Length: 369
Image (cartoon, rainbow, N blue to C red; front, side, top):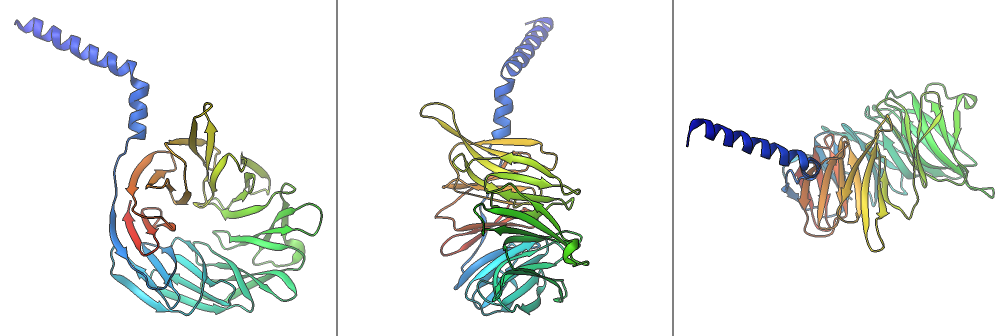
């Protein structure tokens, strides 16, 4: 074969190959976007004796038992162990801090990567706790004469303010990232209609007439409230997700119906994440993960099956689909898959979403993402 004929054949093959890629570009793009990039396995297993809960704390995972709190790194070697004595817990973590409250009890603990920071005794029964990235803690508790009290404690263990609710109930609370504002999600059930609102308190100016109240849609229940990186509020309600901007104006992020949305979360603080079921035919259904960022831009990822639970932290989203865990980023791209053996009780993402603790009935598996 002559050199010229050989070159012509090569050129024709390249052109045919390019044509095939061009014609099938949508399929190829879809394949790349949905590709199972990496399967991840457990790198360590922990077997707690008296398990109550787990929480992320910086690059460590805290395993909470009724007589101690133990911190682990990326192995089964513990970094520290602190003695406690509690029957049940409510927990929240943010960056390098974790707050642990004794459910229906009075004990409150703040931990960081190095150990226990402080211990505080609340004069009442603890219901919910929240901590911001600087270690400021909001604790909702009950006491005779009030429907709810919310106490703010700084990272030195000093009480900053206590807010009293005599006629409404507090369902959640959060503290801004600059430590200036306490937001309380409150409900009033005395009338015919359910009334929900946000009470925003200036922590360093606690005059009642200085508090800002933002009423929500009538007969909607607030489920969660989170400050994002811009110190704006993301509010999860039972039928919608809204953002409260710096002018206290409400911006609708997404409305949803309970029968069509299997899971909804604002747990990673900067995104609203919802899994919706869509009927595509008489006997066919698809499940779509929709992710809304600060600018209300929507990203999607389609699941092959229904989901059991959803978890989020940082730029990582974890979805339990039964036989495996799917890990997505906030751009809606699948990044990791983890096969699971047994029923998952809980998943905690930590270290800005780069690590995961998977809780089973008898063990805790640590996975590096």
